[in-house]
Amino acid sequence: MRLETSPTEHTLDEAVSVFVELRPRLFGIAYRVLGSAAEAEDVVQEVWMRWQRTDRSAVISPAAYLSSTTTRLAINVARSARVRRETYVGPWLPEPVDTSDDPHVGAERAEALEFALLLLLEKLNPTERAAYVLREAFDYAYPEIARMLRLSPANVRKIVSRARRHIDDGRREVVDTVAHRQLLDAFVSAARDGDVASLEAVLTPDAVSLSDGNGVRGAARVPVLGRARVANLATATRRFWRGADVRRVEANGRAGVLLHRDGRPSAFMTLAASREGIHQVMWVFDPSKIAAFLDSATRTTRALALCDERTPRPPRAGARPVSREAELPFGPAAAGDSPHVA
Image (cartoon, rainbow, N blue to C red; front, side, top):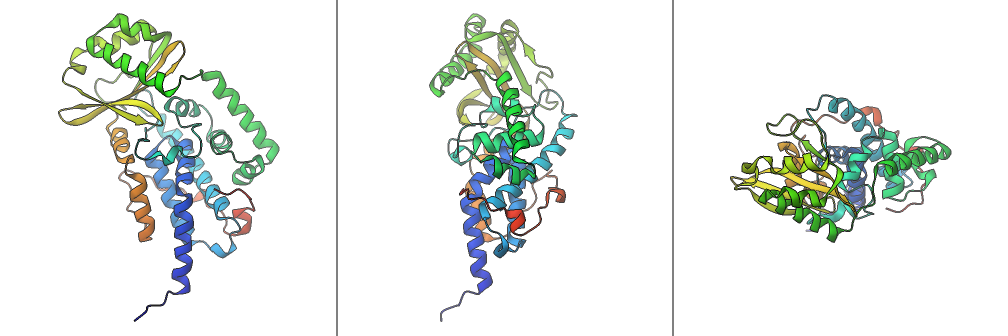
């Protein structure tokens, strides 16, 4: 006996299809604005729940509606995160994502994905960050960004221009991926051997080491500045490297290393480098961020399965609810009439 598909099931099938196609872009927007894969997942999950509830027949452009909703929710979460990070113990670094098996987060363009650049984005306010990401990483037109942020195109141009200046002031010309990996390998090799001279040779005079541990014992709670101090820090505790299983990983499109001790991941490290050498060494010791990095490799597979089941996943442990303040009114005005195809 042939079972008929109801109109409701048919329209929900279409909703799933549209969302699955656009999901990599939505996650990419949210992650770049938030610097956290876990928080970006929460935002995208909330967007999916709203997409199921909305009157989709009134939405002119699903891509514009979903991108707008994602952006505004991400801005709202970023505002809340800024307050929380004021109580963070020691330097805060973005949450790395594994892009070796899951390249979708960087599928649009590489801009605003590298670890060091995400850290620079944190210096912008959430609206500036979102405008910069939408323009530089996803190439949205100014009128489209204006509709998403509910600002005038002229105002958006000023915001993006101001954001570019802030980023350019703090950013150096980066080396290519091959040179970056070579410098990373040289740093790790010299650090493991306790070779301070070789370490200093690959560091710039103004090198800085940042350790994100949020109070974890052994993580430096202030930035360590200067070539000699960074080199000494990397070799000061020989037992840190002794017995450690150092594994290469790809994070945010660049090489990194994940240190395992007693079979458990204990630290992630990557760096930023220019032609002059390594100018930023970034360590993540926070267990929750390391766990999120390991979890990110299977993120897309799990997310698509959840969409296919058409049921929301349980809230992430410790997750804060996404504020309803970012709710967009349903219908053509909210969706916009953007010709942009995601």
